[in-house]
Every structure is written in C-alpha cells, then in structure tokens.
Amino acid sequence: MVVRLFFALFVYSISILEINATSTITFLHGENTEVSLKDAVHPRALEYIPKFEYLTSTVFHVAKSDFHFYLLCVNSKEYYFWFEDSPLHVEIDLSEAEINSSNVLVISKSNWLSGNIASNNSTLVKLNEVDLLYNNALDSLLNLASTDAQYRSTMDFNTIVWDSRSAKRLYNLAVEEFSYQIDERLFHFSPEYHLYWQFMYSLYYQYYHTNSFKGQTKSEIKSTILTDFSYPESKVLMFYHFFNNGLTFNELKENHELFKSELTLRQQKMAEALLQRQVVKEMSGTPKIDFLFGIDIDGAMEGYFARDSSEKKNVLVFWSIWDSKMKTEFNLLVDLKRDYEEHYSFIHICIDAYETPERTKSLIYQNKVGGFHLLPEQANAFRKSNLRRDLKIRDFPFYVITDNSGKVIETEHIPLEVSKRLTNKIKEVSTKK
Image (cartoon, rainbow, N blue to C red; front, side, top):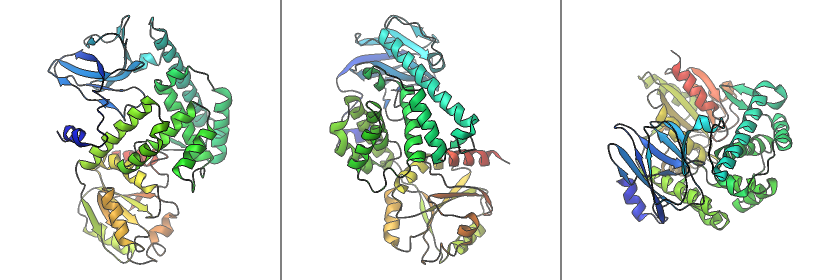
C-alpha cells in the first residue's frame, strides 16, 4: 500500500508498468508458486508489478516495446521469456518446464547461455549469439585473471583485485581480442553485453585510470566516458555510472535532470524506475541510530566492548565526512546490514567528526545510516589511536571485523562500490564457529 500511495503522489509518477499497455501476460501455475517478471538487462532496476495475483495465475501488463524480452523468475529459478509484439494477450502455462513456439519462448538461463534454442525469430537468434559472445569473452578474461599472474594483482576471498599494471594489460587484451560489431538495436537487450562492459568499466576507471574523475563536474565526467569509449558502449557506461543502485534518491534525481535529454527511451524508463524504487526504499522504515561518546577512539571502543553482552561480532567502519563517495558506500551497506543483522553489529567511526559534528550527524540522519556511531571530540583522537597505528589505517572507508570482545579478525580497505571483498569476508567469518 505504501508503494502504491507513493506512486500516486510522486513527482516522477510515470507508471512504466501500465502506460500504453498493449499486452496482458497471464502465467498459469500451481498453488504456492511465486512468479516475478523483470527487465532482462536491469533486473535490479525494474521489476514489473503484477496487475492481478490469484492462487493459480499471475497477470502482468507490459507496455509496447521494440522487443519483448524479460527475466522470468519462478520460485527463484531464472528463465528468459520472449514473445512477439502482436498478440494483445499471452497465456503461459508454467507446468511446462520450457516453451518454444513460433511466438513465445520460455528458456532457462542456463540453456540460453548454452545456445540451446531453436527459434525462427531472427532477432532472437541474433540476440542469443551476442549473449554467447560476450558471456564467453567475460569468462575468458576472468579465467586469465585467476590463472595468469600478469593479468591480476591478488585473489582474496573469491574476489580478484587488480593493480594498475595488471588492469592495463587485461583491458588492452580485451580491446584487442574481444571487440565485436553488433546490431545497434540489440545492445539494449543483451544482458551479457552489459555485464561485460560493466566489467570493462571497473578495469578502466577503478583500477587502471583510478583518478579519471577526480575534481570533475558531472558534465565533465560524462564527456570523459564518451571520449574514452566508443558508441554504443559509451552510452551504456554513462548510464551505468550515473544511474547505479548505490546512489541516493537526490543524487539520482539530480542526474536524471541533468542527463535525461541524452538518454535513450529505454534508459529513460530505467532511470525513472530507479528513482521510484529508491525513494520508496528511503521512505520505508527508519533504522535505529545510536551515538557513542568518548574523547578518544580507543577508550570509547573499549567501553563499548566491555558493556556489550551480545554474542554478535562487529564491523567497524572508519570513514571521513569529507569523502564524497561515502553517500554511495552507506547506501550499499544497507543490504549488507540487513543480510547479517543477526550476526553483526555495525559501528561507524567518523575520524574527523570533531570538525563539523552537526554536519556529520545531519549526513548520518539524511542517509539513514543505522547502527552505532562514534564521533570523536578531539582533533588528535584518530591520530593517537592504537587501532589506527596497529591496523595501518590510511584509506577510507576502512573496515574492521572483530569478535564480540573487540579482537580483530579481518580488515578490508576496498570500498563496496569497487569490490565484494568485504561481503565475502563477512560471509566467511559468520560461518566459522
């Protein structure tokens, strides 16, 4: 009800799921079957809301599109779903494992990526070929990075992290070996094409040219991406940079206003869907925020651990009020906190909060950064800290995983925006007895 009420009031209230609906899709299924329909390329950005839900059927309305290609999830199993644009009503019986007819295809994601399709639709066949090309290319690059020392730096907790030299080598190899010319129409609909170029974005900007955007305005960043990459990849990566899941509603809204005239119709729909989803996420529920007090960091933390009677482990988040990427980082932490709230307490330590304590608190409340917060009151609190010296804390954010007594188990200095190493470490530590 909150979502529907918000959609009625939201200034960007464009119902992507219902405007100009030309087709009704009815999925027939058994009881206790969960069916969801998502955009195949941006499943996290756009999930279609069922028009009707019954015990043995779920009904969706979809708007007119150049090409109807979706990610269909049935009890968490993923399929790709395609149908011709001509029928006003499509009925799919999900009792059949897979469907392949002249105007409908339901195929498991694994079979799609194995090339096991038999369709008379030339566009669909070509899309599958494109997906296979980019899936194989990405697999090849990741395999090189995990087996050949010259293409990677380290491999920690199932996450590859490159230094600038190995990133440059791998990026240049990809440009030389895996450059394909594809039908411009298809790049909108190929999931593997987008995954491949998101990987290339990470290699280029987060490992190879790490300071590419330093000091640049949003317009200058856009120009840099358009210069560094050819069309249509530049269009894809510009959208990826300015409309990602880690941004707040205000950031997404600002980007939308700035770049909406540059977006394709499909990207425009994705941006609006992200805006709607993010504002609902920010409106729903306010996390509990507690502040810890103490003149110095070590003393405050010792007091916290002494008072804590729970068996939970802890994640200490060292951060700086002047680090612009922390808004995105805090947003990405939300899912991590939710997934591991039974096992971890999160304690955020702002190393320079003494400079602007009210601004620090305002940022915490605005971004709904739930958990405990330590705001040191002296300028030398962090510099004198034993934690800083012993753990060699220089980059921010800096994460420290401890047991319930404060004993350090793991540390991590790579942001969530760049790598999943922190997530992998938290998961691994939580499974250890």
